[in-house]
Length: 438
Image (cartoon, rainbow, N blue to C red; front, side, top):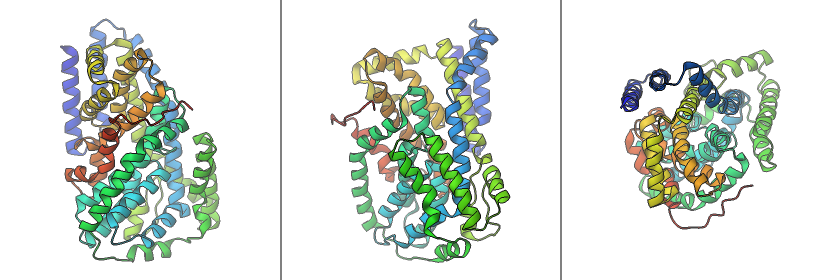
């Protein structure tokens, strides 16, 4: 009964924080205190609990290193012109007739390069939604396509924090996971494209304003070399280079390009890496392009760190053993993947954030996979195909609520975010996708 009370307090505090726009760090800390208290009442010493928390937190250190690099790389790419180059030419070649399809594909491209759904929604996403508003396109339709595309890269980019998190907690190789994700996403991606072609005919862009392109040309030198920091990420990914090394090379090249091509002093580039990029003007594009930096990743890194301590306590104390038994029984009746979909939905709704939902779903699932001698690579791709995407479909989960708010959309976007629910559903079909361990 005590654990149920703790879970209820935690869930209510999370909902309240999300509804009030307050950082979920506070309810996460409250929940941590509740679970420590419950465990202490059940006979676990504070010293033992501290050890469990440290064991859980250690799993997140690799991911936090990625967060640091993501913060640096997103600031550097903004400053050296990489993101502006992509946005400028993407808009220039975008078809008004196929606007919704273009919005989906552009968001896929940018999210794969950036590795973040929030960053995608906050850059190309906002620009696309402004075009949609001015061109008479339904906001929720456009937002659905943008957010679906944003999670394409959030799921399978080498720079994605969620992809790196899943690789760490499952003990799998990141690039092998990406290959498996691309295989299992082929059918839902194709179906999504067909769906967005149909929506494009129903919601064409009727008006186009080139103000954004003019602002970009005025602010940046768009020499082709500014694309190099993004190209190097893709090239090194082909050779399965450690993502931290490839990101480091990309950052170094971006700093060099920022200094030489954009004429930004080195001291200013280092400041951008720490605090985030700013253009120093109040134009529309200046407000969109600003951001990134190490400081921007502080809160999300703390969320991952605290969520990891939850996982350590739950694993060490067995507080959620009853729920694990429910998952096992469901796995016996419906299969492990169907059980993972159910567990992901419940955990995404309960935890209100993607990271904790991933941790909890893994906590419930891994024993069932081990018992049935199912590869840990299958577990990794099943987590990517379920909880990573389903989190964005829960209206009060910040995985979807934050991008929707940034795009001025409401929960109505969910119906049009085809890719987010086609991936979980199509992988229920008995189709051989060739999941491999290397």
